[in-house]
Image 1 (cartoon, rainbow, N blue to C red):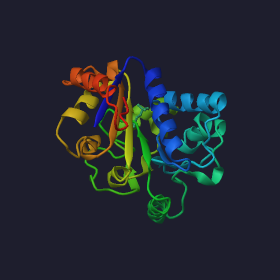
Image 2 (spheres, protein in one colour):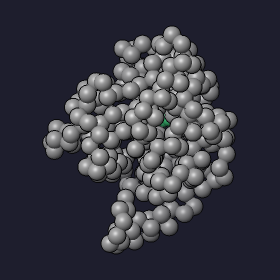
Image 3 (cartoon, helix red, strand yellow):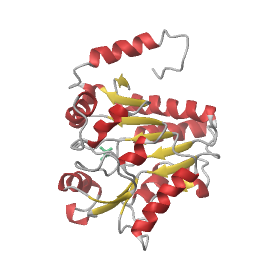
Image 4 (cartoon, protein in one colour):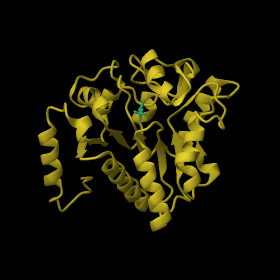
Length: 264
Ligand code: PGA
């Protein structure tokens, strides 16, 4: 695991976009796993800038989004489908047929979830998965207690998540209770995982998931077992990390490495 601490939220986005750009240079038909929420917005903003100023080419990229609310149409302003189009897809040259987002309106949700897993496998698996983290340690909508081997399925959201997400709706009563989400097992199969977190509100959970025990109480903690995990945090989210000094030391020294491909 590499933990990279940046001064600001904007710098997280720039660093993360740099990682996407490098991955794209190595593999133009990259399979990119994408997340919604406030956290990845600085990354998406930077990717949009790279598209318009540097001509970064997304024409071969295939994307898989982590999750979607059950019962919201793609054109609903709070659906994750709508979010992705507004905040990324309509600003870059990605092909419509290469975009994959779970369909919260699918008639047979279970079958749809199975099909989503098959599509990911059919694309050769996810090369780089972008993640945020909830205050309760969830990744995608894998709430505390989720099986660490889970696959794409329907999940019932916790009251805390509903409350957190109600800021995007008129009120908590409008937030759907169910979502389709990739499972922890699905996420763990991604070849590389890039988790982003910013702000003081995430400081506790960032420390717990990186330095605490692996437990389904904090589903993100299983990422400690991932062979290629990069965690990008700002100083506010990093303030409770016991080994923050060491993570900075690692980054400083890795820059001196002549071999390999260190992230920081
Ligand atoms: P946020 O959500 O990026 O809006 O903080 C993260 C999450 O719930 O995964």
